Length: 174
Image 1 (cartoon, helix red, strand yellow):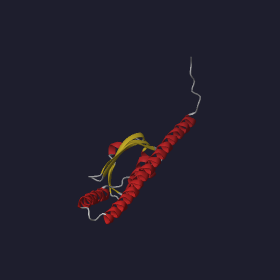
Image 2 (cartoon, one colour; image 1 turned 30 degrees about the vertical axis):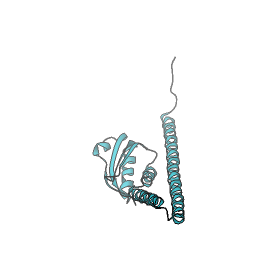
Image 3 (tube, rainbow, N blue to C red; image 1 turned 60 degrees about the horizontal axis):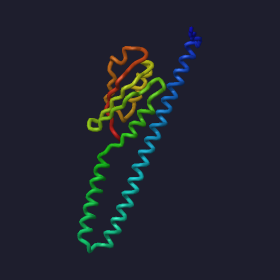
Image 4 (tube, helix red, strand yellow; image 1 turned 45 degrees about the vertical axis):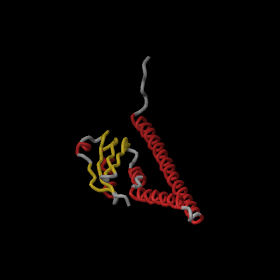
């Protein structure tokens, strides 16, 4: 059996771009849903903790005579204080991920984003169809006030098309 490919290259490229666009759109929707879900969980936890704190405060005012109960309240307050400290120290990386996604155009696909909060460092690994699209992405990061020390190795820029790249940069959470 003989297979003949009669589609012009232009149409093949359009089909490929359309497929890539659909994949990126689905990935973006997935990330948006994931971000919304995580935010909802955090918000519900906050509401639960506020409700629980109010209940504890009401119980404390009713049962001041019970020393054991008072000790339990102090323990709970200490746990809540520690939880508050941990939440303040924990960085919110969702804004950074959202910013990265918004800076990516259709000619770039990301395969991995690594965030190291202790070093305030991000490493993005991916694929760019053209050198120009990769340089545009680098310029977007350089223009942003969130990122600094953007490192795009020269090896990533040797090819004009079909580039596997790694971008390393520092960030600051606002």
